[in-house]
Image: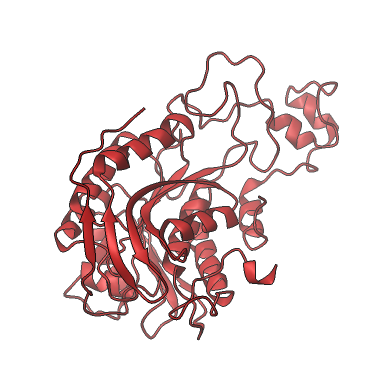
Length: 386
């Protein structure tokens, strides 16, 4: 569940528990590190438009906030994401740019909506921040999994939601047990999120079993959003986090549905056997050949400290800093969650990948080496400095 998760060659056995009973579904500010990336794609700031520009755009200056003219213009337009279903109105496109005129400016609620919007809390409300969803396992030690994802979402300036697929008894030393959530209840969580809150992007992490993968894939086939698939297979302690018979389902069901897949080097080697295991270019092309539109082979392992992105057309190498710190637990989750968050903000894939690489490096640099007896958790929020 972290960037260093595949160091163990042989997966260690852990206790797995499943519920026998079927559970039926029932009915911040942006971190400074991301500000330059996001501002570059916003293109409009509060003070950029003179008051005269308001009239040209059809805004009544008497009703506008003249101290923030760009904000006044933004308030004339309804959020194009709102389509009544709670999901993003954008089609999955890893090259999409930010186009919402209100992004970065405060949004006023509509007083008289044409009809209630079931995809958002509060009738007629306009969502002021992007929304990102993580579908993954819980780490009781708080370093990786859902816990790392939600912290990364917050650091990147998005509202995070979650669907937990498994509970792990885990700390910095290892994973001692896994409790799988019934697939029907995984779907119930997803339905609860999409019916009320919606999502502008999603990511998957630990999915554990074929049944969970099928349930998640079925739901995402019905609710299209940009998707980051982090194919978590083995924990850094050596514990298996994806059952062996589930690998094929992960590739067949979720790779074609993804915007991008983000294995580390060892995971990429397992998924694309038969090629030079040190050649990230060939590995990334092999991942795309498996059905993924784009692939990033992350740089936490191997001789080269580089994230290699193949977008299906061009190759891009993103240098990363190799840090000699015993605080990498959760780095991979932080990378993929930040990538999803920046896609939710509307950044193109390459810029989002650069931002994710920077975030993961910074999280390791700030990592909490004094937490636990094993590899300490990353610290994307900088809590040790507060």
